[in-house]
Length: 306
Image 1 (tube, rainbow, N blue to C red):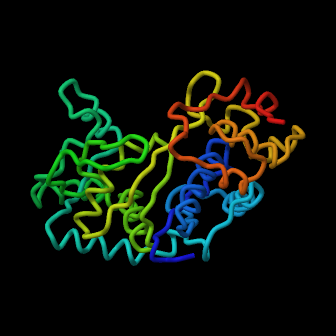
Image 2 (cartoon, rainbow, N blue to C red):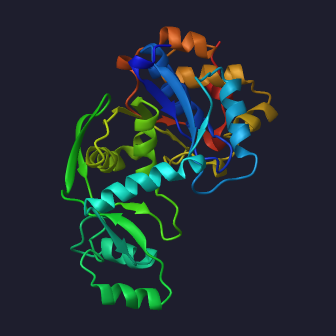
């Protein structure tokens, strides 16, 4: 595999077992990369919730549906110095400030009638040193936010075209000292040579923030493809509470990984029983633009293909 051609990646959080929607997105991320002759990388985003044993089960599930990856798995918990360096660079450029707002205060501010539609309104942008000291005396811990210099940023997406999205003062480091997702993902994609990001379209709205942050760090912006999600029978985003939606659940019902791949491929307009067949017949131009709605209780029995 030619490293100069860049890389795609799949970057799950080890907070639990994959559901069928996760596996479908992983299959697409893998196919996009392999079809373009790129490396395909796995990154475990373990800075937040980690459930014991979840990472290995996730890796086993990807292997079970026929996906492979290049090189060792990267874990964000092993890369903390790199995030600190990026934060230090932004701070030295005058692009950060401390934020003492509680989650409830932020929710109230962003839901106000004249608030900026969910964006952080900059409440702590102009705090004086005495005000910051007072918050610390109250026992509040400060998060570190980006001091954004614009409110919108445009990205290019393979499925959605030019997308102009909101930019705000995103959190760079949480109050507990842990680097925030939006910073870590930007730093890691650049470090790994990732120039292709395929993920669920529920993340499209947050992508302009990440692309803008990349420009501030003089890092390249990947090309994006935000793919449709899998929904449950009520039209909500699929979750493990929707029933038999993990690979282990399907096995207990007598549905093999091969049958799962067949169903996932069928949902994407491809007749294939293996990941290799899916890749051979994969055509991104013909990908459905609508979400795939699973039947009642998330079962695949009715989605089997001969």
